[in-house]
Image (cartoon, rainbow, N blue to C red; front, side, top):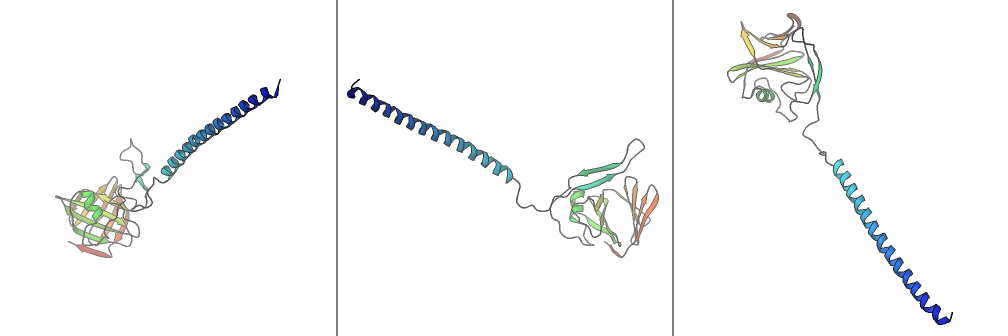
Length: 200
């Protein structure tokens, strides 16, 4: 073999190596771009999922625990958890105006017939839409809706001999300007004298 034969082979081998290196560089760059794009899309999806909850809400989430009593011998009472009836803000309550929550639950504008406040609770007997309704509220607790863990709305109220009566299952609420009486299965469980009264 002569020197002339060796030189063309080394040139062609060098050219092949250069082409192979360029091909691998282009291939590696392409794979890197594809993998980088996939990771970027994955990161973007994770960020979107983690930021999908609002940063501020009108009021905190509240869970209301409601105890149900048996209505007859074939059913049993229990405790169930339900979402709050409402999470919006309401105007402050006053003794001479039915709470906004009560108007909302009744579906009409109401006026106060009687308001009493005891050491433990306050009650509005409101009138509107051709009926009387009962709104109770435990003092020192929130008023997130007409019915919640600290409030009670009853859509039917009877009036007899100066006393308003409202029935909720086996519990009866008797409201007069002098007091709030609560009876369960006919037995008095609470008798709260009024410390403040308003008649509309």
